[in-house]
Image (cartoon, rainbow, N blue to C red; front, side, top):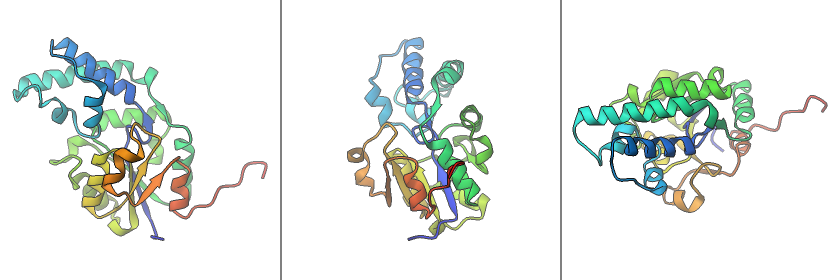
Length: 223
C-alpha cells in the first residue's frame, strides 16, 4: 500500500452536492441569452471543466462569453446556499483525515471565490490547506497543471499523493500529474462511466478513503 501524506480533492460532485445547481445554472444561462437548450447529459459531459470551456460551443467572442459566464455566476450564487449540501459522510471523513496529520487541498475547475464559498457553506474551509482554482492556472483540468501546482505549493511528492474526484477529467488530470487517483461513486457518475480512466482506487462511500489511507475507524465518544 502506498504511504500517502497528501490528499487532494475535487469539489463539485466529490465534496459537495452542487450538481442540480450547476445544471440549472447552465439552463438558465442559455435561456437568458436566447440560445437553444441543451440536455442535462450535455452539461454533465463537461463537468469538471471551466465555464469558458463549456460555453465555447456557443461563441468565440470574448465579450459574449464573459456575458454568459456572468449570467451563470449570478444565478449560481443567488441559489447556492439553498441548493448545495455536503455529501453524507464527507465532512466527517475529511476532518478525520486532517486530524490524522495528512496534508489536504482542493483542486477545482471553479474560480477560487466560488470554491471558497462552497467549502465555507458546508464547514470544510478550515480543513483545507489550499485551494487551486481555474483562475490560477493556464491549463485547467483535464490538464495536470492544477494538481502539479498544488503539489508544488504543498511540497508534496506525487507518489505520496492521491487525488479524489468524480469525473473523467479529474482522473485524467491526476494521472497526468503522476499522483494516485481515487474515483468516487457517490457523485453524478457511475463505475461504467469512469472505468476507462482506470482509477487506482474505487470509493463507494467517503469512509472508503480512510481505508485507502490506512486510517482505522475512530472511537465513538461512548466507545
